[in-house]
Image (cartoon, rainbow, N blue to C red; front, side):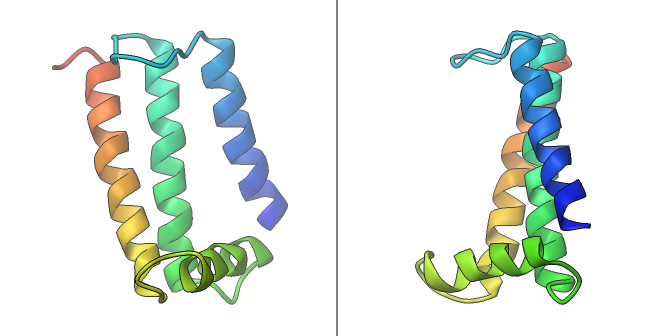
Length: 100
């Protein structure tokens, strides 16, 4: 299960770069939409880690990051990272679709 989640993230990132994702201002296009989906997937991963850390090693690793490499430390940082990824990914998705 954990390897599938990692493969999903790698696949989304590779697809975004294959479509021509570049740093800088967001422009409408498929590359930015896939890049936004990548960020939204990270949000889902941290949300899953908060609620289902007992299911797979990948979720436990994400919680370890929240417990040991974050400030303030704790499981609640997974919710913060999920919210951050959802907000930034949502803005990127709206921009990539050309709605803003």
